[in-house]
Image (cartoon, one colour):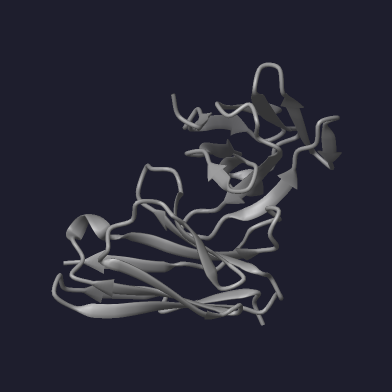
Length: 112
Length: 107
């Protein structure tokens, strides 16, 4: 069983759709993260949850809505996205400190 | 100035070569330093942490220069399997990723 699992691995959606990305960690970590990786750009931190409380929100548009129901699960709800939102969305977890980040395999999103 | 800056490369080297990457960071208060490796279309994975005294793990050596605010990664005896993008990561409470340096090791 991998440490951090993400579903779906691939997602194609129209600009008017609503979809969600899911992340689950089995490592007992107390922090979870969403990152965005676009072509030829550094990994961009989107959201951080520490002990299920959101502690970081890097000016992410409101069309991205995170949810952390417990320390093992993290969601990213997507609504009325734009084509420029097409990217690889990576979930990660760690112990606070910050400790080593363990990434999921990512969800590759294409917005048509 | 970018928070964490890396030469994007690519660095094209033959097998067996020694190659070095540098990474500069802007926040002098940074306390944590790492090198991550990311293979094509895969997630980043920790390669090694970087300690003030420098540290070595097999063919890989990492060093930190706080005065000049840079970290380095040296790879000796390059293997084909070392081909990847190497990400410099720096931070204190939060980690910031550099854009990565792409390495291609050729036969």
